[in-house]
Image 1 (cartoon, rainbow, N blue to C red):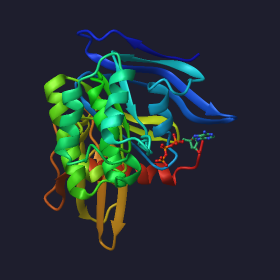
Image 2: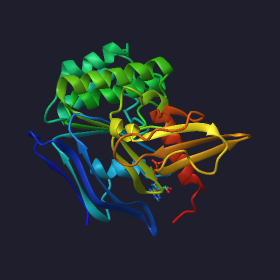
Image 3: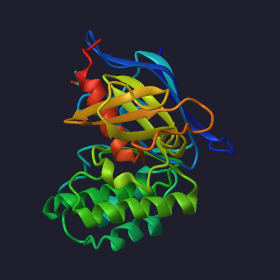
Image 4: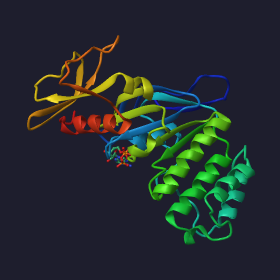
Length: 290
Ligand code: ATP
């Protein structure tokens, strides 16, 4: 059964370890047989379709929800910013930071304030009178102020304008570089994770479909475009096949070893994170539910 256990932070290379993790709501499993190791100091993207189990996984890792099977262990202090970025609406940002200082065993006021200053959030206005994006920044400021070893963020980029999204991901990277913390963030905005995430967890219907180092994953996949064909020009697992008129396009997971050569009429394209995730989501959507 159960458990998220916070272990003391040390030199352990694994920041989060889940094994056989499962959570069900009544008879329906929201998360099942979920097993992965998240190396320390990484920014991991947690992706999946609506209802795939992302919030459930983050809630279990944060210790807010008990697992029904398996275990999860996070190393060191864990901070979680929920999808709705809850802050007391009657409190000013300065009040929220004071509360953060009281409630957290470890607190870095300067670090929290820097985050708010960076995003020009007024300290003296009640949070209820801030914009949704500014309220989100207050929640992030409290989270980084608590000096987490593992920072769990549920849809951190929702509510933010495109520039703020880029700035928040940039700040998170800077925090990771400066402190060595590990970030696991769920998102539907996959386009904005290029150059940010270096690890991927992909959930489909509560099961972990893909987990691993992003560069390794993408390096093992190639998109082939060429004349219409039922099969790709190389041996490998076809993740996705698309056919338009006289053209075919295959996203292929290559076997280990050197990359095979293909005939001249086939073009090889590097696979981006967005391309990869969209292909995986499209495939899982077509599959009947287990
Ligand atoms: P989204 O991208 O839409 O936020 P998600 O990947 O975060 O989705 P979850 O919120 O974890 O998905 O939900 C996973 C499954 O568990 C869904 O089928 C959802 O309906 C169900 N679920 C989540 N919370 C509850 C709850 N409190 N009671 C019953 N079912 C729930």
